[in-house]
Every structure is written in structure tokens, then in C-alpha cells.
Length: 395
Image (cartoon, rainbow, N blue to C red; front, side, top):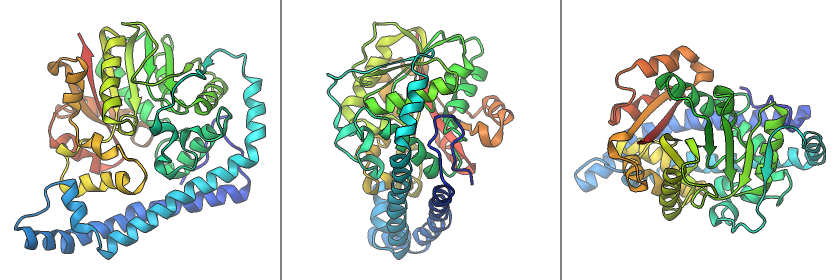
């Protein structure tokens, strides 16, 4: 179970810190596998039948599955342990960074003159979802430590523990898988300018530069400290990326600036109003023939009641207030409202390239159902580590 980062900017772990990270990661694996399985059994054998006896039908929505399970011992144990494990992730990571922060600042200063840039905006009105909400139960949220590297380093180390090694050695599997899919699916598409609209620490930004090395890659986020960490992280990996502090719903770029606008696990952290504005802004800054691409959680209308509830759990118990609201929306409708033509929308499920390899990505591309807008697309998520993506072309 790999939980130790491999890039040069990573916090240096003592043997005790590494062991603690593995312990917390192991607890999470137990919760998300064994206890989640117990909860599903409880749902099938107790909760759903009880709901059906009371209402005359099975649960049909995420909310109804949640209603059916609340109070069940399996649900209570799962939820209590998962919340505590989440807190343990940040406790372990925060302790590592607090000890190593001065060294990280020194290392970042050494690469300040290398290719790549970071531009901060001290006048930016930081959105509440970035600053005022301790999203993911993360103390201090994304602005922890102000402009220091603290927030970025804590997020990096915390996500390594949280992901249990399933997001790649440098947490870049989503970016690598998505970029490989786009390159294989659309071989004639050769973007020269790429924008990541919610990059945090740039972990899924760098794969786009690796996949399209001639492209100019830019990435934005609203949190200054994470951007400083992202820039140093990219430079230490030899990747030239320009980072800038701004919000996705108010991009400081001219019209028709980019061939590709991308995000990963970002939309569900925006309010409904900001999310709608972000789609319109993406459309505005895309060139004709450009591509909008998001990796996100699959929508509730493409999942059964229990699976929808299982993903929506975070909205109720992991301090992610916009999570379920996003999943109740329709990706095709979001794209259409942003200005994209309904006929230019597509969605897909791509297997983890780190776990299954390039051949599996190629097979996903070859599969005639890979882009089907129906429940079979999201149903494949149960087969293993798969990433749900959707996009639209600007014609």
C-alpha cells in the first residue's frame, strides 16, 4: 500500500511518520472495503426492505437510500469510523509538514528561477468554499498558513495517505488517464494551450504537459499557498507550467485563449451559481474547435439509489456542502447552459492507467459503449479503479 510520494518536493518522512501514514491508510482501506461491504449487506437485507414495507416500494433516490440506512448499526459504525479516519489523515499529515515546513520553503527557493511561474493576486476575493469551509474536514482548508507552503504540503501528503496508493505515486493518475484517453480518442487534436481551472497543487496538471510537451500549460486556483507549492512541485519535476491565483468563474484571460480547458474533482466544490459561471467562462476562453473536459463524480441520475447515496455520503459527513448538489445536476445540461451545443457533449469511463496500463485505456477507447450516455457507462465504475469524465467541443 503505497502512501509515500515520489517527487522531490515531498515532505521527508521519519520512519515513525511513514508507519503512521500506512496505519491510517490501512484503516481507510478497511472502512472502504470491509465496512462498506457490511453496510451494503445491511441495506439489502434490512434497510431497503424496511423502507419498502413502509412506503410500498424500494428506495429510488440517494436521499431515500440515506433515509433507509440512518440508524442502522452498520451505517453508524461505517460513518463514525470514516469520519475519525478522515481526521486522522489530516492529523498525521499536519504533523509531518509542521516539522518539515522550513526545509520545504528552502527547497522551493532553490528552484524559484527555473522555467515556470506563479502569479498571486492579493486583492482576490477568496471564495468561501476555499477559505471559510474546512472542506474534507481539513483544518484550515485550502488557505491554511496563508501564502506559506503549508496548505499545499499538507494537501499533498494528506491525499497520499487518503488515496491508499490508488492515485499514483505522485497523485497524478487521473491526469495521466484522462490525457491518455484524449490523445488516443482524438489523435488529430493537438492542443497548443491548456488550462487547468482548479489545480490545487497541480498534481493532475502536469500529465497534460507530459502528454503534450509543446503546449503552453497554465493552471489556476484561488488559494495562494497551494499555488506556491504547486509551482515548486512542478519545477522540481522539470515541468514548465504557469500558475495563477484566480477563480474559475471569473477567468482573467481573453476570449478564445485555450485549446483545452480541464479540471479534476473540482466542480463538486463549487456553489451552483459559481459552477454555472465556470462553464460559461470555460466556453468563453476556449478557441473554436477547443475542448472542455472534466473528470468528476458520476451524476445521480446514472446511478442506483445505494451507489448514489454511497458517493453522496461526503456531502453530509465530510464537510462538502456542494457535493450532492453537483451530483444531482446533469452534466449535459451544465455544458448546454454554458454555451456548448448538446450534440457536442460526450462522456466516458477510463480505467486507471497506473493500475491497468495503456492497453486498458486503448480498450476503453475501442469499446463502442465507452461514450454511451446511459447507466452502463457509470456501471463500469464498479469494476475497479475507473475515472468518469465528460466533455464538450466548442464548434
